[in-house]
Image (cartoon, rainbow, N blue to C red):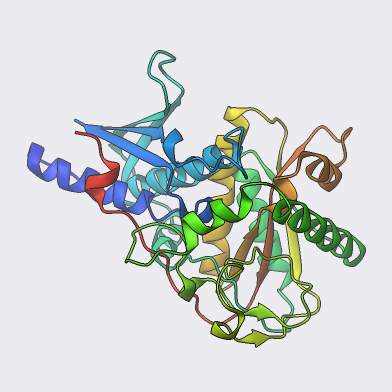
Length: 323
């Protein structure tokens, strides 16, 4: 793909940024900004969109930005160009996470094209999933996707699944009792006017009739009669994404691994739900991998086959691209 004029180049760069903004983020907060110039896209974290109660250290913010960075890399690669990524290149520019420079032409692999095609179809799914087994080959593909981005993905055993669900339920109870939690939830879910961020009621999902599935209840502040109640799958597939470190660089890697896993799942027609409550309570997060394991849990995922999910809104490019 060759772009001849500066005007054409800007259109292409904006198209790549638009793909980046389709990444998942905590409460659909979309905590990223971009600056584009000749063949370069700077990726920034937006601290004003960090959730103070759930993410005081900015870990999940950085994971979200990492997911957006992966989409950006992927789209450039799918368009037949080789991106070069420098992380934290300039410590004097607060919030700068990565600088992506567009390099020489290079043919995109079939896998790259498949993952890029999945970007627009990946949506968090909070609906019940079918009682169907995920083939072993698909689970292997998800594990390989995590490894490709310097992370690991562990599929929980039946006993491990029970333990993780219990930890998630305990984390959810503790979060609900935390001061400011409901106010923060309200900020991102109870808009009276159309918003281009947050989680609309159409994406909140039904009540869990058995109240066992560890999915964040985005309908918590809405009247109960406004939402249906459904039975969720009794034996969900639960996976833990982990990294060898636990600093901003590891969080950024975790976000890129998370997005590669989610896009791989989407290509295989799987529905996915990030479950972040157990990694938002430090003491519970340690129990997911063990304090002596040398790895850190960054996200818990639920996967299965389900009805299509509703897409959440996205902010216009004018709000995320700095002039």
